[in-house]
Length: 150
Length: 407
Image (cartoon, rainbow over all chains, first blue to last red; front, side, top):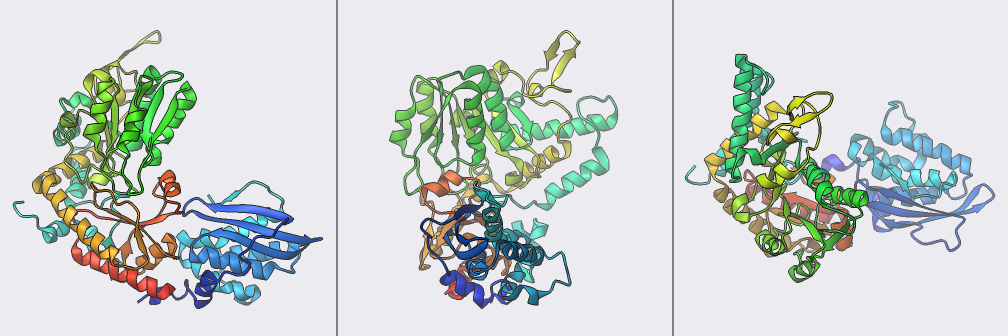
């Protein structure tokens, strides 16, 4: 019945939505930033534990749609063990993928995150996918105030 | 129309023939905006093709024709809401502007430090923020009348808020997020006992309910044309003549003046005092055409048919496991707001869109209502006179299928 939506709602997304990874609070986290999408009410708190400039642990709390939940869940998995700079580069690539400006975008370079490429076809949903990454970007840049996608 | 014939009405709305993602359009976002009948579209084309010029200022033929059509629409609005005079019908760009106009003219002139303004907990942002701004400017205090879990105004609590400091009460006639129709006559009676004027936000109510401003005895009534099957960019402020006469103007400019010198300006009479600048001529004419169209059907018949649709949709929705209806007032308009267990409204919206069904997912510009129900957002199906029970079946099947897919 929902054949048209297979690219957007891949099984991996349903899986992360049902069982979000790293859905917990890091007590005494080095970084804690809130992200908010006022359009749809998605709200998350991102926690980062740092070792030097390496993200030793990442977790989140909050509520949102399947796309935003899967995106933040995947992100917390992927950025663990990465340096801040590596995470920022990934954000840049992710942003390029989801906004779909580059037709020759190399999906292989982004690994698992490619499951979220489907949002390109749904402009109203791009912010659902990028909220997590904007929040991470703010955490890395030590911006304390809550992040809003609007 | 002697019998309400929904299929005939559907023929009048060209957009209803659109295919969305290969499926028949099921348009259930009418609380956000209604689709337009051919008669409204034609009226605008006809005006621009045959009768258009600026209003109120030319002696030439086209200006006279344009003015007649524009002022003719004002008379239609007057009759549609049974105002006492055309002087009480002010054209603005929407319900939002109408509320801001009252806040910044009547409000600034009459509301002072320590005075109180009462609204309810179910207001749209457009009936919250203009009052917050006025309170910031004047030092007045905004009081919020609470609602129950069913989404009804708690009348006793509202009554307790009305006191000698109350200077204005501004209440939604029908809630856009919950569908609740407020007991506005009772609210107005309580307010008038204390000599307090009442503004009714009729943005949602106007396409569903017969509005008679004299019978209601409201002091101000506001609505947007685009929710009444008319074009965007037009709204109406009704105000009792005596109140409007006493109010300072809103914006300065052409059309709202009688005489201008550099020393002094004399303002124009009602309603022009509040209509600075060239108005939205064509879309006002479109509003007149929409009212003509609705009059051929009859608001009472529309209301009866929509009540049937809502009852049908509510019964079907209640049978879906994991679906919770937000807004279960005893007296409701054709709005079905709901949430599903573990499925976010935005996912519901995207999934239904792939089936051709347009609903709204979000906070409906009523964030305090969302906070009250402790939900980030709701999915909202809102019905109009052109919707059918078959479309509601499509919606219900869609919801059941997406629940399955999400598992």
